[in-house]
Image (cartoon, rainbow, N blue to C red; front, side, top):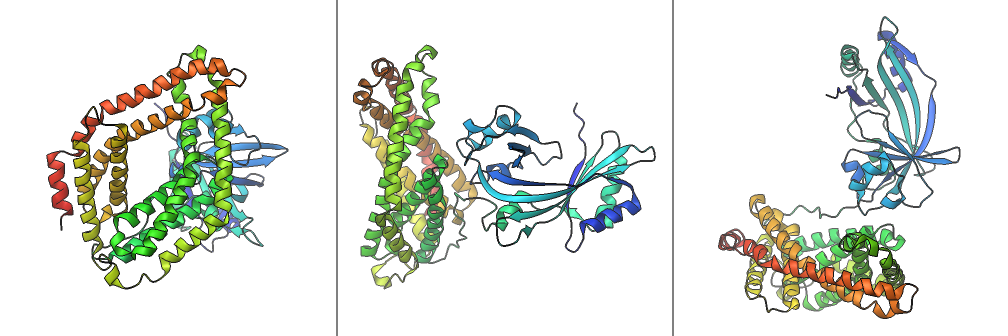
Length: 519
């Protein structure tokens, strides 16, 4: 059985000076002060703050020519540390072997750890002793300031960390009582990392992937749609710098998802917009989707590379190294082309026009039949019709149906999922969430089926390039094993289609959709 040591982190109230707090504590307890220290560190986290969401704080501390990663879990235990190389960002492969890496990799996955803020911390360590001069409570009083955010450092909330000592529960309980009842201290509401990130002007929650727009069922459809579209546009813009810097693959992925969701809103709620301008903006977003596609396809193939190798005998892995190298080379070329497009006048002009569309007057409502209708009516109607169309399409698929039929069903499924994600809050969760789950199960099968077909075709197309490379002929022999593996997984996904579709298209589900989203 593991015995836990009580720990608390308090925020000093406004107007309470740290030195005065130490003096106050000295009048009530036998307090010993250790020599003060100062450290400057960089807050590291993923762009979407995955560590913060897990209650983890990761700091990059530099000094004496060395860089150290210090990982704290918020429980008051000593940090896990590891030496850090010099990187502009840290992917899983860049982390030092040991406890830091073991804890972080399952959390960050394919995301990069990025420098989000710089902090200076002045630390005063204190010990509370009992009558026998034994240390019974440890305290760490820290004043923080965010750096590089203006002409002067920005003060952050001073904090007092209180940690008990095993076997002495009463002293720490008494100290906490004094701090809360007499000194007016409260548990710290936010982490120092969150405060430091906020001081830079960024969102402490990180770059969002979910729309935050509160809608009411009777909101006008045109106004509701544009509010959603503006939020999605912000996500595109937030992910653009990380895409261009190539920090990690998720920036491009999230940018594409935001564009795809925007296209879905324009397509499914087209009756809220003027037809001519709607067509122009849909074409512009379609173009953005197209220019970002090749890089993303290669990202997926490279991200899944280790999984693909698992289906190949271990003694043949080395033979496939030229294939991995060639994929990486193609990805680098695709990224260069993507950067040229995203930095060019075509993208700038298209995006400026789209932003103008999202705030300009839309024109007479007689050209926009759904403009003033309640959003719940219009979105509900589209959910009902897209679901019915998917049931019709899926019912027609059998063993002889071509792969394109499954791909078309997958595309319609994305339309339905985006409608539910963006507007599902207008209906009860106990209806929407199970519907999303069954749809996701179907989409997973359809997605695997399509991805494996694309990946197999791509690998076949590498044959000519491989033939002339060192180790290419041997790689070609083993490449067939990879392609066979992909085709087998595609066939396996298809074999599960009927089961997943039956759940999605059950009579009970159809009645529920009709009843919930009916007019």
